[in-house]
Amino acid sequence: MIDNGRMAGDEFTWLDATAQAELVRTGQASPLELLDAAIARIEKLDVELNAVVGTRFDQARREAVTARGEGPFHGVPMLLKDFLCHTAGDPVHGGMRVLRERDWRAPSDSYLAARLRAAGFLFCGRTNTPELATSITTEPLLHGPTRNPWNPARSPGGSSGGSAAAVASGMVPVAHGNDMAGSIRIPASACGLVGLKPSRARTSLGPEFGEYWGQVTHEHVLTRSVRDTAAILDVTAGAAPGDPYSAAPPDRPYRTEVGADPGSLRIGFRITSPGTCETAHFDSVAAVERTARLLESLGHQVAPTAAAALDAPGMFDTMPALLAAVVTWELDAWSERLGEQLPSSVLEPMNAMLAEAGRSVTATQWLAGSLSSQRWARGVAALWEDELDVLLTPTTPAPPAELGYLAPDAKSPEELAAGIATGAAFTAPFNITGQPAISLPLHWNAEGLPIGVQLVAAQDREDVLIRLAAQLEEAAPWSERRPAPVS
Image 1: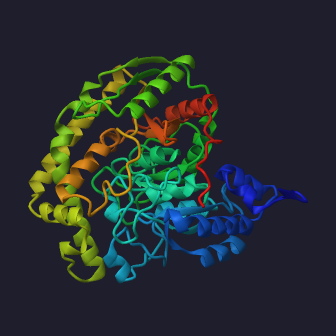
Image 2: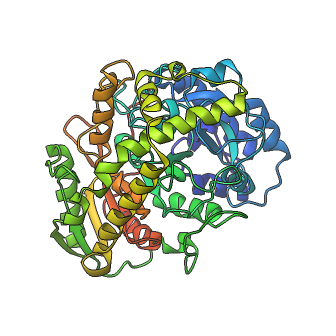
């Protein structure tokens, strides 16, 4: 409802961040009104969904009143994943019980958080994540499971599952995520959202890190609209002082690509999992086939592709040892920050297993594994030189799993690790190559669960993905598809 040109709180729920920012610019709402409406939704919905594990409502209200209205998203509330993107003085736990017990707080803003602040976003809390972000479901022992708004018995995906559930349920229009093997795209698929993993080094990991987990970590957001995804990338992209490398800058702002003609693209599609060549679940196959037909009707050249380079062994043979070494490093890094040696037993069983295994990975093995995965990545990236403009695949090999299926205590550590690897089969390859990849909510199955599709472009060609995603959004809009209200 609108009263004297001003909108009421309930009217904000399904507006994207761009529309909410326009309300502030035109005086139809104040930042405090937007924030208070978001806080009310969080307090109501999170009782069931368990998406938000830390709040900073009072600080955000002060910032809503005092912030200068210079950024393009001035006054828009958002949530940050409880992993990386830290904010000065606020708790960061990363799903680790020991960090909550020690009340760990970040000493400063990360560069990404600082850029989001400068854009005008109001941070109202942090979202649930699996311990150390090592799972494709969000069910940490520390905080318990986050529930999928489309079906509370199902997983919202991971590791940015809390952020995805918050946006999909209408708590906030946008939430931060990061992606080491699919952790933005998998939750986007599970929750019916737009999830872009930008090119490697498109956004900075500084000042604390140049790389994180080697070269696989990418940060961005989960949104309901392509225009939000593009415009937020405009305010966060670009190298920061001391970054070891950076992505090539775009020719023009990403927001101008929304609505631009993508031309007739060569699009290949594949429905078998890289490395195993197992065909995806029929729901995931249906999503790809439906999207392929839609793309063909829009004038693109669409055909199945073997993309055989994805099946070469270089990545799959080396990743277990590299991941184990990463978890060992995480444990040692937190030991140093806390000033005490943490045993692997402070971690959940799978992560404890990885931390122990990582101690036997030598520096030589790490370097050899890195070089092997880089050679593999060159072979994959060459597909975009000669054969493709875009690759279309399922985002996930199956619909959102039931909660508990990959819970930290549901299976042996070895079985959990294998299940997680299977669930990330379509997404993880492009963390290794560093190419931009986006999940779009273009299909729902017979049970009413969202089933995303993944589009992958050549390195540094987010512009191609944004043009194509916006074209698909117009042709098959999803903005009116919303989960049933949480009781």
